[in-house]
Length: 116
Image 1 (tube, rainbow, N blue to C red):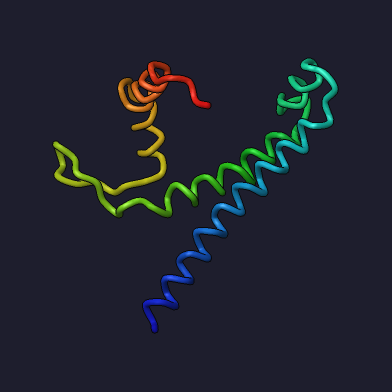
Image 2: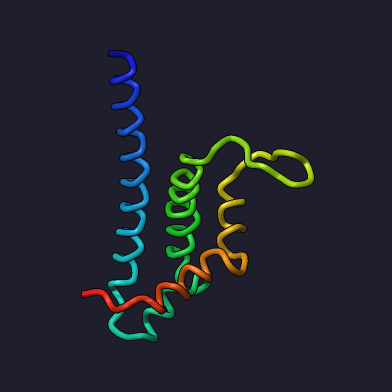
């Protein structure tokens, strides 16, 4: 019974993480929807001209993504030099921009037949 309750609570927490990201994205989309052309969109994306976009990104989207990415991480990851090191959302970002990680996945996707 306790396992089922903790599993349900874990599912609710994960759902809350997704809801936070979704709500943040909705706010950002609403911010840019006021633009009528590309010039206005560019101006709305410039935090010097539109400080609201900086707030939306730094105070809503980044913390929501940080919590979401950090939620599923193992506490430690193997390291060749130190044996193990603490995992962090930033290590996921660093790993994803290394050549051959996500880049190779994108290249393989281009080789696949078109989706229907």
